Length: 108
Image (tube, rainbow, N blue to C red; front, side):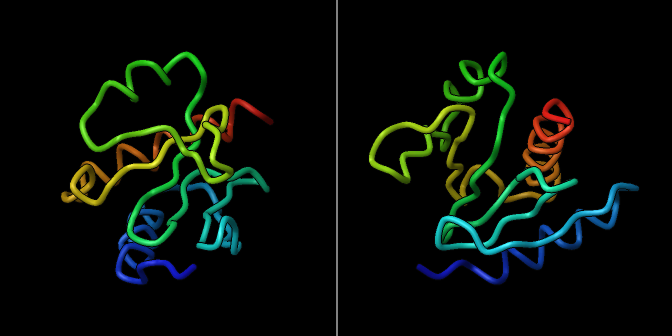
């Protein structure tokens, strides 16, 4: 599977706004961005893959363009996919990056 490089560029630009250091790793057939070894957000084809704390899953899944991450054909705990329509603006993309970072920090 390939991933959309233009989305990767947008994420890299947004990550410059954070004082935290992020690393990149190929995962799920795409590209993921990690904070202290914990996945925050990634790209699978043209969608974001986002880690979300359990307490926010229900509200996030109720949003348009968000669905459970079913990479293994079964929903994965604390993971969602977001279609491109859900992060058209930089503010929307930043929102999902912040959700992913919140999840990563909760696991440290």
